[in-house]
Image (tube, rainbow, N blue to C red; front, side, top):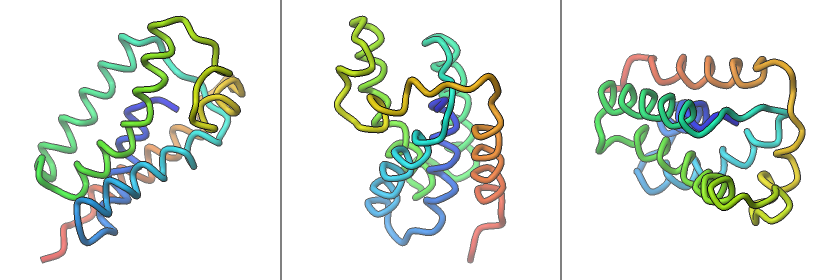
Length: 131
């Protein structure tokens, strides 16, 4: 799954939490669930650029101290394993997270599942904040 989409999904789910700790943990859980969908990853430079844009947008919209930002960080943190694996040239089977080693190779020609998840996360994120 594209890291920026993990961030958007996490941020959307972070709105459901009461604390930043809960949000970060839920973000991490959402990573595994999202990775189980057939998906395609991008090369590292594009992944990094999209992730930076998503995190900047979330930080601008909700603040770096928000539950949404904490959940976004929690949601992308597991992809550090993918990054290290790619940089070291490791096969997917060598990765520890089940969603990286078992499901990562099930790529699809389109990005429909990723677009749907990103849209859901963005829609939730853009809802007016409770006062």
